[in-house]
Every structure is written in structure tokens, then in C-alpha cells.
Image (cartoon, rainbow, N blue to C red; front, side, top):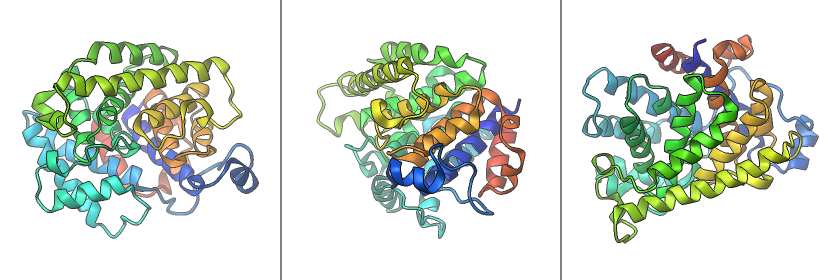
Length: 332
């Protein structure tokens, strides 16, 4: 089914659909695109944002790391640093990226240890809108996938909720690619929150827990899992309502922070589990961080349904198609 390609292209398609609606109200989106939002990516190439650019950076570094086993934090962290700094300095880095990523990457470029470079109080969605490749990478143990998904987030976003939401995003992608039924996702994610509440991946995260002045690493990470559990309650409420026409941000949040981006992206996918284009259109037609919400919805839909579920002609127009193909085909 080419699920890895489906997820990589899906996140880019969602990103491209949501880019022109990101700072518009629902009324403005309706006037410009109709009530259902943009119908297809605009332009040739159809431009994406920093969401896709950074997901590609994460994915390409993972390809390099997995080609040089064993896969460890000491191996992959410098690779992610290099890819993030390359992104920072790229002339294509002109898509209104988040201040957290810019600030942290500047300090990474200056050679500061990532534990010092990261923005300790930030849980912006930049932490998890780029994590899908960690979910798609084959052959990782659950512990390694968890540690890696948290590390890639922690290098720029040091808040525990950014770490937990990134892990949940990666596992959702992995579980869908492995064939989990979409309806089973919320309960599985809730179980993961409870199981991991006191688990701090010291080998991957080092002394990050000390930055906010916490008394113990378990106290630090538990805050992230608790906030994710709270937003999963809101996801359940939104799914019970089953409203496929209203602003998806009303209950699960606008998505500017990591846990809300996860929940609202999941909501858009779960409202349309077998209609991938409808899912990303729902994310794009939202009052919040529409490109990141639709990006995550696209990653979930693509992991579930595979590459063939997307309109065939989109692949020839989307920006960075070569890099998306390289990552997806390596893991299909």
C-alpha cells in the first residue's frame, strides 16, 4: 500500500492546503475557498511550509542514521543538528517559520549543546508537525522510537508536553501504518499516556528535565503526559459530537501548541477516516494553525490508506517531491 509514501506525501499535501488559510477566519476561508476549504494544492509547484521542510530534515537524517547502525542518540543528534541548521540557512526558509525553531536552530548553529540551545518553555507544534518520519522508520523498538521522537522535539522545544505529544504523534503514525483501525487510536493513545507517565528517557534526553527547575525527571515528564491526557478527553468529546462541518478547533484547540495540534489533526482524520482529501480539507478549513493541523491529518490518513488514496496528479506538483519520494520509498 506504500504507507510510508502515503504519509510523507499526505503531510505535504495537508501542509500545502493549509498554508493559504493559516491566518484567515472561518468566514474569510468560506468566502475565498467555499465552506469545505481548498480543494487541491495551489500552484506548480504547490508550495509547502516549514512543517514539510522540517519533516524532510528529520527524515533524511534518519535515513543517514539508520544506514550506520547501531541507532543511538549520539549518532542521530548531530545529524539532526546539521539538517536543522541547513534548514535555518536555506534560502527556502521563508515560509513564516515559528520563532522557537528559529531561535533554537540559531543556537544549534552557534555550536551550543542542544540541551542549552532548546527553548525550554516551548511546546509549540513545531515539535510534532515534523515527527512523522520517526513513526514511519522501520525496525525500531518501542523504547527507541519513543526516545527518538522525544529527542527530535527536544532539540528545539524543551517543554515536556512537546515531547509527549511528539511521541504520541509518532506512535499514531506507526500504529496506522501497521494496520490499527482508526477508531482504536484514541484509546491506544490514552493507554500510552498512562503507561509512560513516569518514564523519562535519560539516554536520549540527558539533563533536559533540570532546565525548568523540576525536582525529578519523573515530575518533569509527567506534566507532558497529563496535558496530553487532558486534550484526549477533548478529542473524545469532539468525536462524540461527530460534527464534520464546523471549525475543528472549537473543542480540541487551535493547534498552535503540540498537544492541540495532535488532537485537532487526529480529529480531522478520524472524522473522515476513509476520505483523505476530505480530512486535510477539514484541517485547512479551520480557525487555527491550519497548515500544521492539515499536515498531521495528512500524515495519519496516508499512513492508514497508503499512497494510492491520494489524487495521482498531486504528486507531480508538490514541492520537494524528490525528497518525499526518497524517504517514503526507502520505508515502503
